[in-house]
Image (tube, one colour):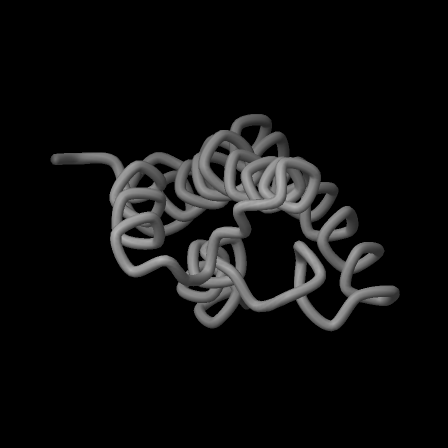
Amino acid sequence: MFESGAILIYLAERAGKLLPTNPEQRSVTLQWLMFQMGGTGPMQGQALVFIRNVPERLPYVIDRYVHETKRLYQVLERRLATEEYLAGDYSIADIAFWPWVYCAE
């Protein structure tokens, strides 16, 4: 098995925890998980690659990924201003975000 989101879904389903069975709540959890998998993770990852690993400074590329990462974090901040956890209850969506948020500068 590969892809962290798929692994989290698999483990949550096996354990019967961290992924609601109620269709509406499950949908919200999966939406936030996919937001991390398809948005924040890739954008922040690319920003870090171009800031830390590419010897030639490429201002346009760096600005593009940094600005998009900031925009995505603003979405996250707006959600967490009204909810303690992304999907209402602690879930795999929060678990997926934690390593990215923890290391964000």
